[in-house]
Image (cartoon, rainbow, N blue to C red; front, side):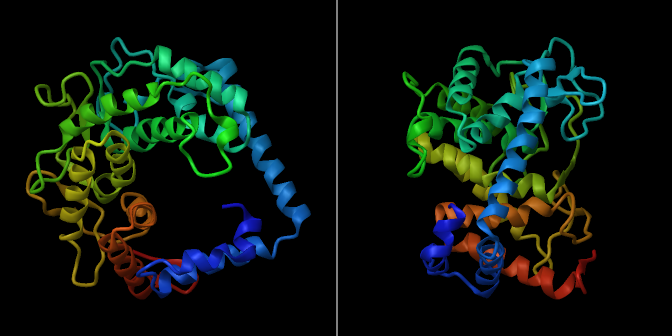
Length: 330
């Protein structure tokens, strides 16, 4: 929502959502207050600053690293970083030369800032050149939030099915190619799941997830890795009509939530095989952080009361047990 829309009454609609409790109301109110008290000139200056920062990074990548995954900002070189994400012990580099990870991750931002021509060019390039039938091991979490999320958001924008106000970035002649790629990727990621009674594995082999275990398969999985899949998997199910993606991610989230402490706090890492905590430290930092983010976002997108209940209970527990003055401990 634009800040002006928030200031002229849209806040009432947000706060009127069924089940919205005091923590959600407070969070949204603080955000809106910050935006609404900002002078128009200050908002415009901040918008321009963000746009300049984006183009500095994006143009540097396109000029020096594309179609590899990421730019090395100091040397000006590139790295095919998809196989490095999630800190695997032995990245599977052999035969891998990138899938333009940064471009896919940036497509929706190009649309948001209004660069329809570059967005359309990127959509067409990805549609014609990216293939996920690769014998590499990848982090399920990182691949979901960067690649799957990037493909889904770009598809909705290119297809003209996004929210009002985005019709100007609709790509002429687009036939849903990004959704086909997203579904193919989602099916490969499903190989990390073994039903509702087991936690999903942290890594998966894209070529043959079920028959071939990731070469550096590890038994440890973090809470964020389990609890940060539903938004993309759920949207993929809604767009394709295939419930298997949302079902797998929701099962994983419910299983994770069932392992919370009596204080409604989650630990950091679990043993995938036993389901027991390896590192039971509760925190809002790395390893857990995006669980809080996604439980709220998934509620806002899908409207499931149980998702809000998870977020409200966990966020309230953080405020009660982890907050120390202006800071949050462990």
